[in-house]
Length: 331
Ligand code: ATP
Ligand code: LTN
Image 1 (tube, rainbow, N blue to C red):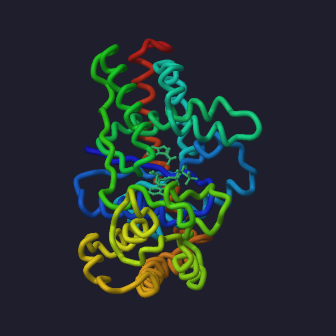
Image 2 (cartoon, protein in one colour; image 1 turned 45 degrees about the vertical axis):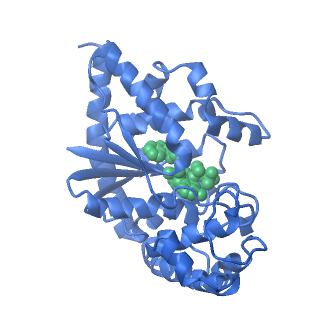
């Protein structure tokens, strides 16, 4: 069976960047690829690579689980589970660390960025993070991995590790392909449109969170940074602010950049931003309603139990085979 694997870290409140770059794509794929099995998880082991307060982490895990389903993941199609509840993920990370090199991990741009931002000590976990991610993917022999642009380098490393193991021991892992959304792969900050919209940005005005109320959504769009030209024209390099807003518009409505430019030909930012505020609100409203129903429900617990059972079976078998393949334990 062909498989699709992906995860999101429960490190903060989900914003429309993660939604448009990743979650919305999962939902599309589950309908477009009926022959594939989906393993989608809450990457809590990744979240602790930068130390987290216990209560905060618990809460974010639960919230993210509810968000996944509220955004439209169908529990009949998708195995949704919590990464740490399938211990094979930690085991595989260790085994892959023994097949990875310091030099290749040192080159990871996310590690360089995140370690610079760390005021206190940088954990070994933050350094070895890409091997945990490689394990998440290779455990299930995923064919495709839907991610945002910023994860491409980690996917390339995963492919290198898979090829290395395959060359050394004979074919064992499926070499995965990244699936990066054409529009929305990198939604930028609303206040600083040359950097990625991020849940860890200290400026709350830089993003719209999935659970923000209507007035906040509209306020954030209205005050989003643009430029003094006043026209609705996509130009990523020269006009990153308005281009980012057009990208958000396009990835929600499915309209092309050109169609959007035509709609707003001769109109200004005010009208465009008002419409966009309404479009974003209309997209998020049903998600918020469903989220509130799910958060403390038995339904959500059952979905996660079921996902854990299905994921564990595959992951456990693969770990046992890998142990055997490399000569660990007894035959
Ligand atoms: P942070 O936003 O704090 O840097 P992160 O990058 O670790 O967190 P996650 O929420 O773990 O974000 O990312 C989940 C998925 O969403 C990944 O595939 C990532 O590439 C994608 N993603 C995150 N932010 C954006 C964004 N601004 N635009 C497009 N995709 C994004
Ligand atoms: N590293 C990713 C989250 C993540 C992931 C994965 C994505 C962890 N394991 C496996 C795809 C496949 C991030 O920070 N966004």
